Length: 138
Image (cartoon, rainbow, N blue to C red; front, side, top):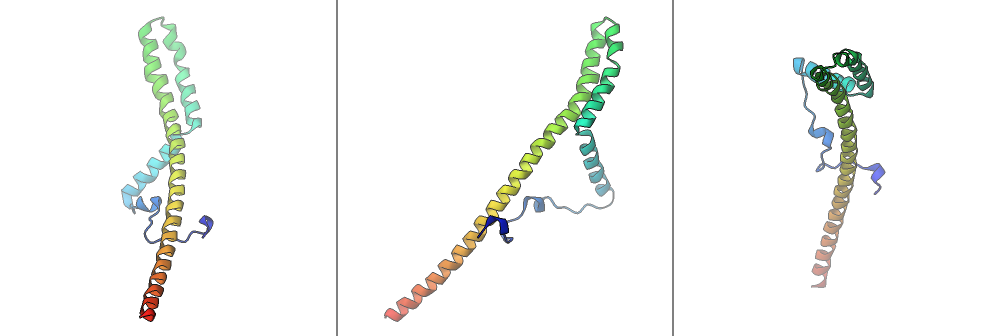
């Protein structure tokens, strides 16, 4: 048995199948919209765009020569705008690694379950042969 040609095993559920839930109506719209937002905001393009937007107001904050507007700009504009897409990109990278591991684990588990099924069938056959031989020996 090769892991490239795995047949599905009735006892092994794929991780993606565990999450399948049919959404309809507004729930489907919300789900698709959330994925669209996450895909676009959680990108490096958005990271750079938000950086440019935040930097547009930096001059006004520093021209005041007052610490309060500078701290406000750093905390409200720059950090919040920049960290949101950066964190989302990091989460997407981590999720891709998790998905790859789940797929590998599923393939391994399916292989082992199929191997166990084959071994159990072989043991059953051997048990039947042993019963036959015991009967013949008497």
